[in-house]
Length: 134
Image 1 (cartoon, rainbow, N blue to C red):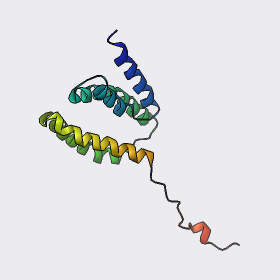
Image 2: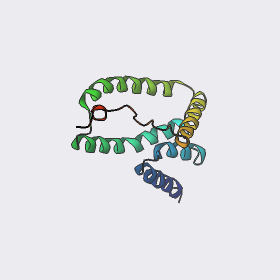
Image 3: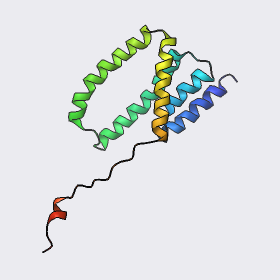
């Protein structure tokens, strides 16, 4: 029965992730705080948790025409470079050194979710508004 709690945690965070809550971040917290998993191991498990979801989203966005090809062409090379750099840093730096910045990031993300920026209404008059009535 040692598998039941991790299974339920994975199930719960996957459901929250499907709702757009950020299940991967919650999974990291549950694994490190409650299940005693090392942070690097938890990050690897989280990546395995994320990849199928991201692949499915990419396929559906591609099929529905929601991908902007020029943006992809400029973003993908940079994303690969920084992903490799981030992976190198994560393996080269002591886990204890990574905990504080990651905790600060989580705290800042939580605060930003609690108090989102309000969108300013578009108050610029359009061309139709400036034409006199005929």
